[in-house]
Length: 292
Length: 161
Ligand SMILES: Cc1cc2nc3c(=O)[nH]c(=O)nc-3n(C[C@H](O)[C@H](O)[C@H](O)COP(=O)(O)OP(=O)(O)OC[C@H]3O[C@@H](n4cnc5c(N)ncnc54)[C@H](O)[C@@H]3O)c2cc1C
Ligand code: FES
Ligand code: FES
Image 1 (tube, rainbow over the protein chains, first blue to last red):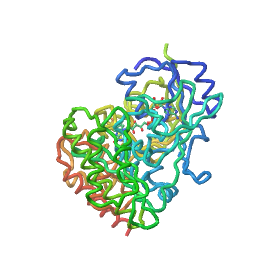
Image 2 (cartoon, rainbow over the protein chains, first blue to last red):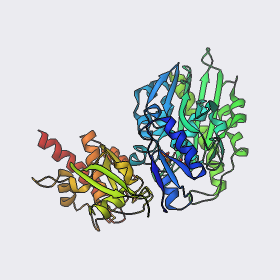
Image 3 (cartoon, rainbow over the protein chains, first blue to last red):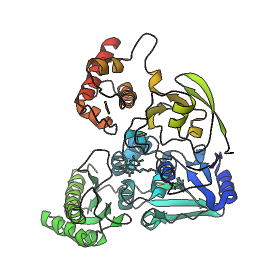
Image 4 (cartoon, each protein chain N blue to C red):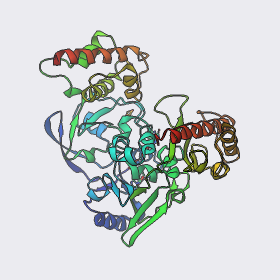
């Protein structure tokens, strides 16, 4: 790694100043688990690092106007273990728990994880299904965008150079819904997903009809993918085993995996269908249990 | 000349000061500046756990944390695990169960296992395997390591009475 400046402002105004001062040379440093690796491989060579760890306003997990607020600097481990998260969106606790190792989760942050934007990461898949919104703040103001518009390509996001991801807002899981995150790990427990699927199934008041279904997939495209056709096939229908099977089959045409040491593209495509079906079955079972 | 940062931190209970550049990892500062070579260098990218330490009580890979970020914080390394009275029960169990061969992974396993047992004194074998999943060992095949941690939990329970 080459020489690099380091600043650690203690409020957001200081971060905006530093971003302005260093311009394109600057990179925000959250947990560093993504950035430090990229710097070692010389894939990024920032002239200045702006550490976010002292900024109180970016920390913590809380309820805010009915939504769940994940501060950008909340760690993966905090989300995994937070009672507030477990009560409002158990799917998120379940998903963050499956990221890498406890050593990474203790350090990696919510904001850094999203800004990293590797399509094999776990949290984006669940956050899409939960219809999370990402809050981006610059010196000039704040904007809120739906998470599915946040990811634009491999390692690319909608964050502008003068913006900081400050928080993520997650609506609570609907009461009549069940949700699940399945991470297919044929190699080791701490690997990236070979295929990842999150599914949410919400039942209508009759307890029989599928009121809403949401499905997202990770590791099978350049960003997290929403399986809208598969979800639409279930809405308003009775979620029979056959209906779930047919809906899952729809993701075959959606996914675009690559051959790598986690499997061939053809294998991942097959597994995307299998894991979507399983995710739907398990989400439905949870919806019926009322266990969420 | 690259800018040097003055870092004041506590390592294994003692106040320590050092100078580092922003690009230096905590692992480099520990091993090369402070001479604490018990913490090992393996993959350097967060996969193997050889460089495991705790920072403010939380396990992490010192190869991925920058040394400047240690300012004002509390670091525990393998050098702080034993006490003047003798080895820590996890260390004693590793020795007696022969849970190491070349030993390069051992400091990371011991720091990780100790952190687990401090939180959960009586973990199941499955839980131990899950917790240690990201610590890699190329020699032992893991069984002896897991057995040593089970054994250490029993020793620690006994001491507590
Ligand atoms: C060994 C290893 C295994 C992994 N396995 C998994 C896995 O199984 N599943 C998974 O999901 N992920 C995995 N990851 C990826 C990991 O989740 C990311 O590295 C991590 O989430 C990044 O968060 P961070 O806080 O460390 O970010 P940093 O590394 O600090 O930053 C990452 C990027 O985000 C930018 N950034 C940081 N904070 C902000 C902000 N608030 N606003 C705007 N930009 C910001 C930085 O400038 C940088 O470009 C793994 C990583 C490693 C090293
Ligand atoms: S050297 Fe840090 S995890 Fe391998
Ligand atoms: S004893 Fe050699 S790597 Fe574990």
